Image (tube, rainbow, N blue to C red):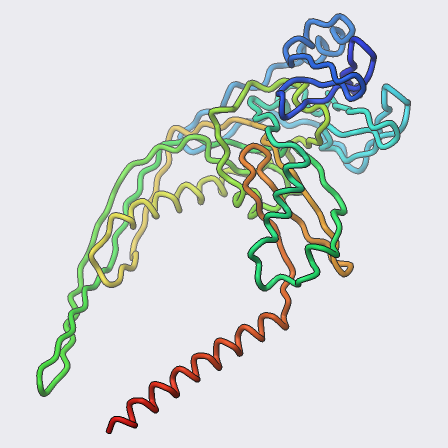
Length: 369
């Protein structure tokens, strides 16, 4: 198994992708090089050529229902070790490891065998926000959280922070939805003797077509699916053809959930979106309940992409809290501890406040009689 590293042609230092300049930057002399220029360097020609001479990834897979024919690779179980080409140190990872850093010398390492052939992504969104932006977003995330423990922001520490390219499947398709609803309109009035309520019941039908482009589903079991959906959307206008230099300085895993396994989640997300679009057109009723739904998908198209994410972990009172940030847009999500004393104080304050107001109203009403 070959490990690919990018070295500065001027000083020999490690090159990593710089999110601010969108170039490869030397960690020692600060020289910058474009991503494309590295392909022309004789020093790396053999490694790059070896990588690019592999079987090309399929352009995309098109069927009526997202069915995917995909070549099965021989899976290697357990942990695998690689030798760092700079210091000879051992790099240990699982069978999905595609990019990482040497724990001894810090040099970036790209495991080219994890990106060969059909394992190579079609597309990538390069990192746009750096580590400092992730740390600042974490601080801003704490603000306004009134039920968070007061000491959480000051006593907890960042235990881990890592920029990773998460494998995603991007689904395109045309969708059609047919939904029937039971809807009601309620009218109330009164006279001197009675209060009246009239309920009218309606059968409402809606049907429509919608096209979806690049509905994302993450292809990694290591990633929390709810987190990955919460940091959407990505700006797909910045998708670029995949190039290995983009991985330098960041972590990456190949997918361990393939397109076929991801299809049900994509279908469900698309169906939910169509249902929301149709229900949004049913207005003017007091209640609306779907009683029958039917959805059909066609012209399915699937592409494989790497999307950038900052993952952060903090420790507070021996408990780890995990956060994720969209490394393109800065959208942030995570879990926070709850100060139960604050919660109960807020609850009882609200209860007592409501009770006091209620008692005052009753007193005013009774005192006027």
